[in-house]
Amino acid sequence: MKLLKWGVAFFLSFFIMTNTAAAQGFQDVPTDHWAHDEIRFLTDKRVIRGFADGSFKPLAVLSRKDAAVMLVRAMQLPAIQQPQVKPADLKPTMGGYTEMMIAANKGFFTVTANRFNPDKPLTRDEMAKALAIAYGYNGKGSSSFKDVAKSNPYYKFIDGIAANDITTGYSDGTFKPNVAVNRAQFSTFLKRVYDKPHEYIVKKDGRTLKSFTDDAAAVAYAVSQAGSTVHPVSNSLMKYGQKPADLKATGIKNGVLIYSGSEKESFDKDFFAPYLAKGNSTYFDTFVVMGRQYPKGEFQETPKNLANYSDWKWFSDKLFSPSGPLQPLNGAAMAANRKAKVYIGIPYPKRNGNLIDQNGKVVPNTLAARKQMVNWYISTIEQQWKRAGFSNLTLTGYYWVNETVIHADDELLVTDTAATIHKLNKRFIYAPHARTTNFQNWKYYGFDGAYLQPNTFRLNLGDPKARLHKAFLEAQIKGSSITLEIDTYSPHQMGAGLPNFETYLEFAKRYDLQGFLLYQGTEMVYRMGTLKNDAYQKAYEGLWDFMD
Image 1 (tube, rainbow, N blue to C red):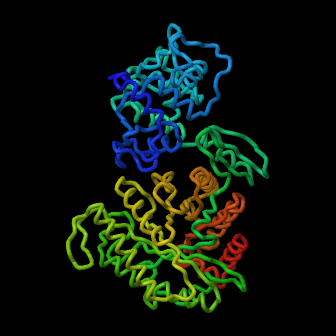
Image 2 (image 1 turned 90 degrees about the vertical axis):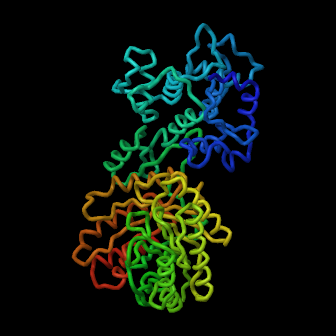
Image 3 (image 1 turned 90 degrees about the horizontal axis):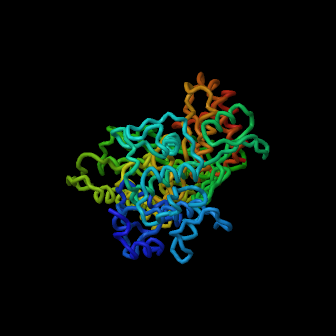
């Protein structure tokens, strides 16, 4: 199948931007399409464009001309003023002429007998050459594909993109170098180029110490340089922050996670006093009240999540009960003459097994049913909050309890939930764990804030510095903030746990962290602020010094 089949219509529509398609998705690229995220990324960056009828035609074979246009657009390369290579089949009146001349003179594509062959399909070997030369990918001669001998003139290019994780070839061990590339495939390959920065720098006191093309090498070097930081270098498509985002839209400056549900059965005003104030100053301004467990299971995406409407209702009722977290928090805020913001956690609606609704009716577990369950819960919380009439608390928004978004239908569920919450003029946040999937899409999903968990607070993890550098680097790349972390250390553990927590705080200062959440087990701040233990008190003062 050749691109010529599509003729002039293909050419025109390739260059006509359909804003509706770019913003809302293409009719032939549903959310669960294997290349959906890659196509969305490149259309948002104006690298590739859809058709006037709202389609993308992912299976349409890509021509050398259109591949050149995409590549040059992505790299934002300037026109060649004095070309040394002048293919006879390229004319200034042709669409894509400038881009093809750039590609030809940069050596991205093979020019045979002084012909660029713009309308020929792009083959996988030529794609490998273009990407390897354009982005400087060098291999180590270690890749081994059954159908690409080391004597093949394209081997070094294929080896280069394989060594840099742009391709793994086919499951049968082949690369299929002569197979034509379609629009979805090339979008995927090109997106992989931009999945991570092309360069990293290690800085200290505002001065660049060294640059790297590998993040692990940059982190390792930073660990060896006391007081240094690691930063991504922006490129033609990606503009990276140089510190974690402050996420002002969430209204959170100093936020803390409060576990209710089965993790902590009861609260009182005294519990919240050290969270709200230190002397005459505010300590935490935002409380994220959520639960991971209910009496018979868990509220996250685990095999133990068997929760139905009654379990969610149990949790919401517990939140608003006299011994739940909200009434004592409001009372403590009144006593301290403080106002506090509150985010309420939304349990993860189970994916397996029928749902039993609020009337005891068995409902098939579908995406629509799960959406309805979440909307019912939000409505229930809103009603209960209104009835409670808290004087010193503001319901600012909701927190997605699950720590990753893996499934295509979960992407739709979260997006729909965000829309529901935003209609209420409230905010939506989550805290993805260190190895979460699809983290880069958090803004697409409608979250107003994401707080990455470094997951390096446990005592048995050894030196946390490399993991913290990696987390703060990831936050810069993904435009998120960070969750600071300390476990619920007992008095005999706190001596060992204090240096770990102090390292967190030192990194937070080093990377200029503004606006964060604190994971503190179930009651660590209470222990730090009330128990007479030197290590506890030192941690409490250290956290305050950072927040002040």
